[in-house]
Length: 82
Image 1 (cartoon, helix red, strand yellow):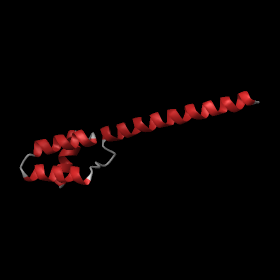
Image 2: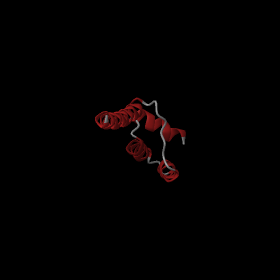
Image 3: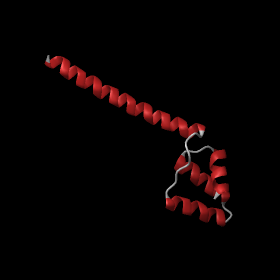
Image 4: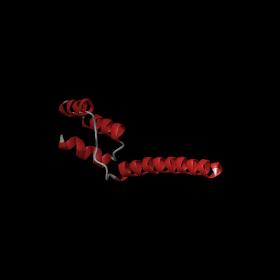
């Protein structure tokens, strides 16, 4: 009977690991297809605003892409919306 308990525990752990991996993949895909909103910290948003005010739009878009994983179009739209 102990064997089934241990086996059940191991299967539960494996299922948890698989679910965690799948959740990460889903989040990565959401970022790539744009269904996930761009989330930057307050400091990062302020940095983007400063770059935009300094007419450094390209650097602002690049920064947003690096921090959020957004596409070029999404990052540009985000910068333009600030």
